[in-house]
Image 1 (cartoon, rainbow, N blue to C red):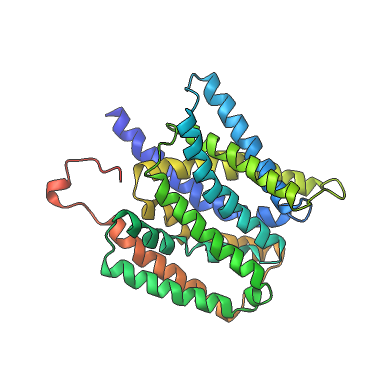
Image 2 (image 1 turned 60 degrees about the vertical axis):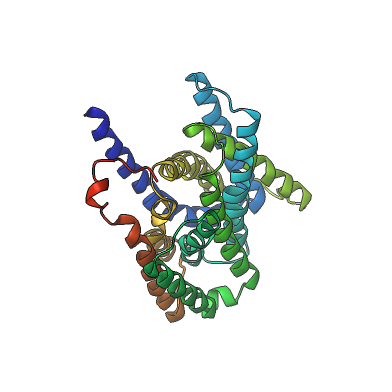
Length: 304
């Protein structure tokens, strides 16, 4: 009985971390890239967070990942963190507003459903309707002045959403390390990849980062990486991918509000309409995931 009570509390805490913490990271990334080169900041963020988590887990007695598990973690880390988060960081450095970046990433559940078809996942009519509505929302979003001013940034955030979705679905079929060690291994490998990309692209620090830049990096390491990403990987193991990605309902609103309040960002009528359409699409996609199980399934615990 105590375990059954803890499990819902863990789920609620994980969802809360994704909804609120990840919603705020878009603004924090924007603050960070004013002081840091984008790939360098993302690489340092994940390498430090991953090493801290790995060291802590090993100290607690967790087994080191096997070679096969390191390979799986590198594949997922490349898609989710190097391509997904790295793409967002580059897009915000290119001038995409933090709220608009979050709104573009909100299309990720659409890609999750589409990629799920590769593994035989069934898609309902309601989910297909959500996909079509989401594609319309993407079109509306690109009509707004923000993404039109940065076609490169627009392409990056859509690519980031697709890469994150593919990695999320694929991760269910890979031999990842158990528990939080998966997050640590993914962050270590992604951090190394991002720092290599930073070096190859010629990034370097012209001046030392400001206090705000250091604070942004610290927040992203502790909350955006260790806390929120671990919560996300926990949810991927315990709920269906489309449910784990339901933070897309809330993140855009949180990011837009914080961007307006603290960064002076503005969104036009096209972006407002796109937000309504995309969030409605994500809700449509999420509805089948939250339906109650059939009576004959009620006695079993479904873990996705």
